Length: 566
Image (cartoon, rainbow, N blue to C red):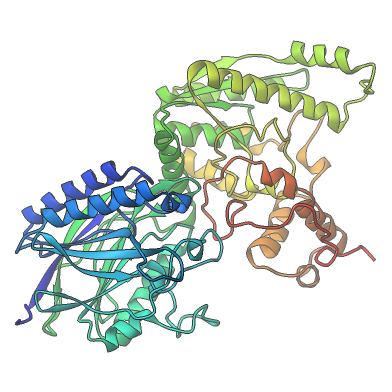
């Protein structure tokens, strides 16, 4: 068959819900209609688009696997002589040994599935655990489509370009294997989770593949939030010269068509480049908003409740919730005690008014007083200890949960990453809730988010005093966070070095940090493992978050990684 001069490719960057095979199929059906209307030759969907990604243990349920295989047949039936579709799904492994399933991509054309291929590289680092379910493909092959050899591969298969990595994770490069097998165009079906800065790296990585192999590279990524993970989209088409011919928007569903030259000709149109957020703080805001919105909606809820304390963390959480869900879906609650300042109460009220969200003031000091009376025979209540601080936090947690139950809402946790790292938070108190939107944002970043939200809002939404005032839990007289913690600039720098960069205590000290402070911070990090084990899901916006990708033991001795202070 004679190869055409160009391949008109349609990219369907869609927001899938894990497990909702019918809903995912309906979204793909709509994309098929749009691709046909645009005279596209090939519609490309993302990784595991029919079941949703990541399906995790759902793939162990035969009924679920059967449902999305039935949906695959329905996708195939939508195709004809003029339009083919590449779609991701879970395939069964017919071999008698190995994992029972495969992470697969199917080429549908002329009413049937005409080609299948399977993922070669199965990541098991950070949030990924694909080797738990899937069998790796040892022999990738080219899929023939009307005279065009499609080098179809799945997500991680493109992430082992040896010239990019100092230490490649795998001993093979599936992209290179596909080119050697005769691929004319490289097509990557992906579900690549977001973290701030990742999009620029992906762009360089795919440009390297395109240039090295003198091939056009098509990348279709999913978008949306699924549990802790956020997928930013930014699907693209890049030419052998490394230049972008097409880029879709980030953090929203999108559809675009791009003509890919196959005869050695150059790209003759102006590139179609949707605007995207390149600045890290703007990316983080967009990522948290999307993760929050989809977590709430895909969990079957519309509304949330937030404890609004007058501090920066709760104010930023309230603003992001109002932006993500709409002000009518956010209820803020002031839960003051005898230690809450008048300024905090006033600032919380002002923030709620600026956002246009509902606001309740439910002082809990009488309840706290009742607890003091009850505990007095067995607890020293003459001085406010950590015990009594935690009592206040837990009263607030119970109150928020009562409102959530009564009004069918989800509680949002307002803790930041710095607090979660060192355990400066109370189990069943301020850690109480369904989702922690800021729990992957260090305190210093939260201040940057606050400034950005004020700059981009229609009028100031977070009062200056909230940002400028020394941070305090206000659980005892004249309390500030720095009574217990190092200054946040110091704390966040040590945490970044240890958690993100993987430096040892000695290396962090050598970089100029006080040895006793380093010892204290690292000790607090690992002493708080049990708290994080019971914490609400986080919205992952960094490369290394305290979520499903953080897997340290609870009952352990960390003396080998924490200096003894000598």
